[in-house]
Length: 379
Image 1 (cartoon, helix red, strand yellow):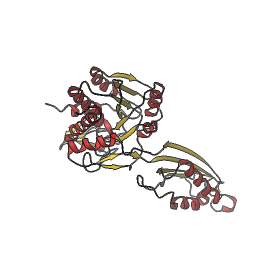
Image 2: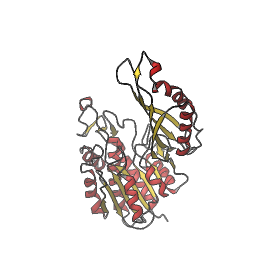
Image 3: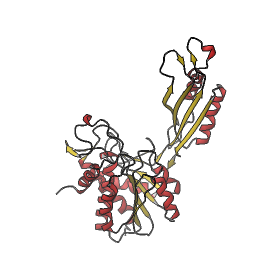
Image 4: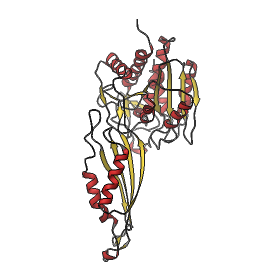
């Protein structure tokens, strides 16, 4: 008998749902959820498709959150098989989104199916929050759905985000928080001129260099028990006309902070401006705050996830706040307990992205067990 989580994951991978397209993935999920008694709300915002599906209205409300969109496949001829034609070989399912995160979506659905078959009269309510705008700007996705839920008076109690969290084996790592992300787009003003007559020009690259060195060397904080120290990284530098004999008149630098709860975004902005001012850098600076850091600690959800991993996989899980951002940053500020648990992150965004076939069913069983831990009263 074919594994139903594997078959559903294949159906989702077949849809080339590059951000912000959903390509019918949510409809596939709706067709499985509606017969189970879920009320499914399609919530389009801008060019993004979102889905809010809920069964029941009692407390607690336990929600699975995820995204149907994927990053570009890259050159298709570099893949051993078509990224949108899922293929099983050597015990792994290959395809774009196999790990990030269509396998998690499939496991959400089959876990719920198995849970309801065994516990049709469970406590609380079950929901799913699905978007097609996680890998991109994340402007019209989860953040908009959370605003909509707030207007409806709906508050999520526990949320399991299906992001690929594990490192070496399924279940070895859960994310209980994420660092904040603050991007700066810096425009340094100079004066264009001939390289042979530098006294008639003002080189913005030379002007910025000492300040940039100080920014790179600055210790922004020491981190804390839950987060590593804040990091500063330059991701892009653009300057010059392409000619070897022209001093540029303008320089653009893009940098990013991944910051802990030991510092605020306002403090980071202030300190950057102080350094630029001290070096006399004439500039404009645009800031983009992608999300504040969030942390879930000592909660019923974390304990339920730990027990589910132990019971189903036989291992102890490690709590972590490492990695990039996730849509958990839009959910946690409402007071929701958020934990991320999904497949191995070893091949995400890579050529030949894959997941071990056996991990599909194992992940679904862990998700089902989490629901039992939270929604089934034991004697």
